[in-house]
Length: 364
Ligand code: UD1
Image 1 (spheres, rainbow, N blue to C red):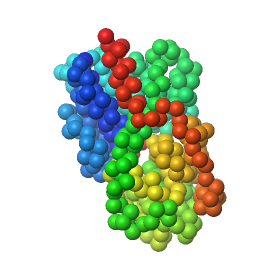
Image 2 (cartoon, protein in one colour):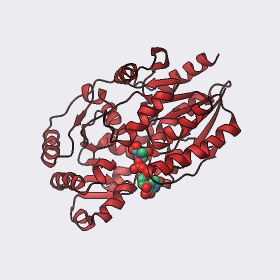
Image 3 (cartoon, protein in one colour):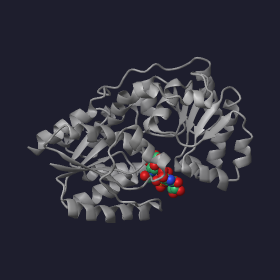
Image 4 (cartoon, rainbow, N blue to C red):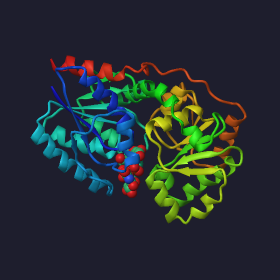
């Protein structure tokens, strides 16, 4: 069974890694790894391949950055050629980025079945590009592998037949558990001169937060206050770095003494930073899940989440972008009010194993 596995943007790499590793254990599967090139900087891509020992991609579509339509169209055009040449039995896509829908659509049009890993998540916010990618990819996929019960409920409500939905756990957590011991050896805290539990970690890159000056400012004002209590480490996404300059905020950011901007980290260093932080502030999706497993308090700088289990059972609080609210919730955590997490079902490091087993059984 020839399977094309697609990864394109940073959050895809930790999801595809355990799937490729698991497929390599089964001689009846010929896994082919496709990188779309949606992310291309070493810090956004190559370092994840080396940290996670992902094999070099067999094919790189090298699409690069562009508007949504242009980027997705380029992915579709390049991937269609690959499909015609490779004639795979199945395409596996992960997550919710433009590469996910950009590869699912041409495959289905050629009658090649698609498996969507991390299906069914819904923020119910159609202004979020990822939500569109999720809804569309799920609607055309043959195998829907879900990470949490809400995923199954959402898909059933949307009319997806029950026999296409598989609750298998979370491949991103497979990667976290497999790499935790290695990440513990990272010297990143020493390099940054930090002590465990004495800093906050921040990521911020959602267009809804960083592309609108007023909203970005509302968050920044909260960070200005929080950094007077403990250092905030902020690995800056390329999108956000651009906006800081465009919005004329460079001097203001530089004046915040305990606000430490860095380049994006590789997987292992970032995992170490998360695991030792007093507090995580983020608008990422995956980090809400990772902090739940690590039992680190997570303040989500968004109005909604597509991962409700991290709130119901985990350490996640959905706080939005209001300055006072962010400050208040951060102080709650600094004052010792933190949630303890109950591990979500099947987030046990074996999701990829379950997925590959199902794919083999179904192909017989
Ligand atoms: C994408 C995903 C988002 C994910 C994020 C993680 C979509 C719609 N969004 O958003 O879900 O959370 O990746 O990082 O797919 N850039 C670089 N170097 C790179 C990649 C991007 O400098 O290697 C810059 C470019 O200026 C580009 C901008 O970042 O225009 C945005 O990149 P893009 O892939 O379009 O979206 P992200 O914001 O990264």
